[in-house]
Image 1: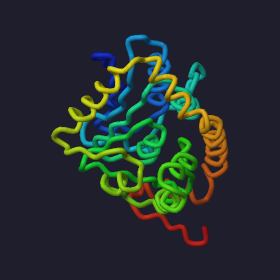
Image 2: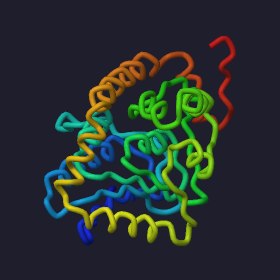
Image 3: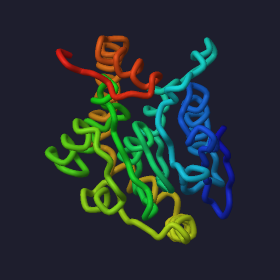
Image 4: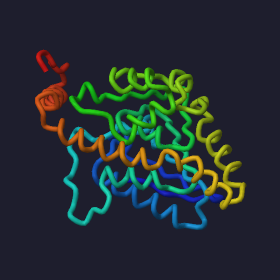
Length: 251
């Protein structure tokens, strides 16, 4: 479930599966894409803020069981990323708690990302026998530089909010108790400016990168398809179900 609420030109999209730490399943990917398309076409929406309900921002893809994509799905995960790349209005990510996988990489797709002091992020792709996604092989290098991006994407480490800000992944960090108030104050200031100016300036900022981001999205998903179901991925998923550390010896 994703809640969509509009106040004063700001559309807040809230990932609302707190019992699953707001993990994404196929329905969630499809719904977020639909809401972003709706926001792009809606003249009353000037800024979009994406956040999570409860103690997590998003635990990433739901490993406990995801319903299969229906035949009538238009977007899926790759399409959701495409929609965000092409979104013409300011897009803010407000990571209120832990973010894993796409719950971390989606920060690289934001125009501006904020984190609560207690929030922390992890890209567990190596630990899952998979590879990075959501354009992070492009966006993270651009935001953090190649060495920090490599460490974060390859090392499967937890990074706290201060480390993410220092690396350039988060614009700012706010105390938990006032986190959304601070984010919304920033969004209100942004929404007060003329929409044509915001759209044109964002378009110019994105122009040198959009084609490369779409290419990264395609190539990452091709790589995921090659690795998914491979020996390392099978061992990682088996270990997850059995609640043990994976054994990647000789893999």
